[in-house]
Length: 528
Image (tube, helix red, strand yellow):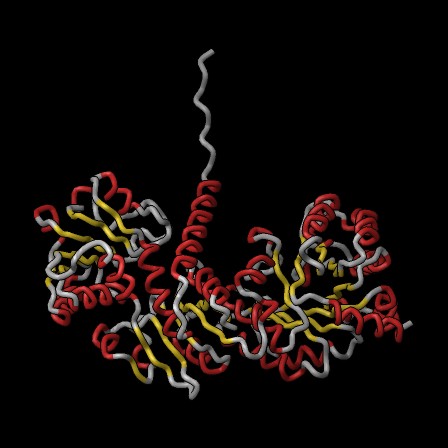
C-alpha cells in the first residue's frame, strides 16, 4: 500500500498547479458552492474544514463534489486551534475527519507537526493509505530555526513538508528561499512567509523550490496573514511565468499597502513582454531593504516615503539632477551590483503642466518641502517658473528655497496672492477625503495639481472644483513618473495609456469599496 501511495504522490506532483486556493466557509453547502464556482479556473483547492463548526457534516457533500470533479486536486485541512486553526476538537476527532475526507476523495491531507508528534507511526501510515500527506508547521512569530524544524519533520514520513514562517523583515524571505534552494532536491517542500512583508516569498518561493504556494479567494477570505488572492497571484504577479530568468522589481516604502505601483508596473511588464515581476516591499529599515536588493537580487526600485532622501548615501552614483534635488525615487541595480539613482518625480510634475501651459515665468506654489516637493521645485525652476514654497516647517522651506533659488511664503500670505498653479506635494489627503492642506478661501489659482492620487478626488480637488479652478489629478503625475521609471529599468517605451487605464480602474474599485463600507443611512422616521 505504501509503495502505491508513493507512486500516486509522484503522479500528483505532475498535475499540481503552482497556486492552491484556500477555501473557507461557515457551513458545508457554502463550502461546496464556493468550490464549484472556483473549479472552472482553479484545479487545486484547499478545503479548510476547520472553519465549519461541525466539520464532519461536510463529508457527504465533499464526496459528491469529488465524484463530479475528478480533475480537481483537493487538500483537506482541519487545523487545530493549538496550531493556528479553528478546530476545537481532540486529535482523535481531527484524525477521524481527515481520514474520512481522504476516503471521500481528497487526494491530499494536511497534518500539523504538533499532531504528528503525538501519533503512533501506524496511525500516520494509515492516514497515508488514504491520501498523500502534507506535514505542516506554522510559526506565527518569526522565520527561524528552519533547519531544526525540517529535521524534526523529516522523522515522520510525508509526501510534502510545509514550513511556514512569519516575515518580520524583508530579509526573512531571503532566509526562506535559501532554505528551499538547499533542500529542494531531497524533499518535496512548500515554504512561504506570512505577513505583509512575506509577499516576496509568496511569489518567488515557487522558483526557489516550493512545490506550490497558497492564495485566498478574495481579500476578505485570507486564511493566513499576508495571503494574496489567486487573481492577484496569477494576473498581477504572473506567478505561472516566474522562472529563474525573471527579473525582480519593487516599490519600497513604509507604509506600502496603498501603492498602485504593482498594478500598473506588472501590467506594463506584461504589455511589453518583459520577463519581470514587480512587488510591494514594506521595508521597516533601509538596511533590511538594501541587503535584499543584493541577495534576491532586485533589479530596480521605486522609492517612496520615507526613503527618498535617506537612500542617497547608499547609492554608488546618481545623475547630476538627482544629486541636486537631494531625493531619489528610482534605483537601478547594474549587473555588477552597483546601485544608480534617478528622480522621475520631476517628469511626473513637469509633463502634465507642459501639456497645459508655458512654464517659463509661471507663478507656482508648491506645498511641502520633502522629497516629492524637492523634485517639483527643482524641475519647475529649471524650466524658468517662479516657485513659491509653503511648508509647516519654515526652516525646511527656507533651505529648499535657497538651494533652488525659489521663495518662501507664510500661510497668512495666501489670501493676498494669486498663482498660476498650486501643487500639493504633501501626503495630506492621502487615503481620505476629510483632509486638505488648504482651505477653500486659500485656493487662488488657475490650476490645482494634487500629487496625491488615492483617492482620485481629494478634499483639495473638491474644494478647487467648487471655486471653479481647473484641476490636475494625482494619477497624471503618478503615471508620468512611473512611465519614466519603466523606461529606465527596461529600455522600452512605456505603455502610458494602458498604465493610465489600470490606475483609473484601480482607483474606481477602491472608491466603490470605500462607499460600500459606509454605514447605511437610517430612513427618516415617518409620522403616524
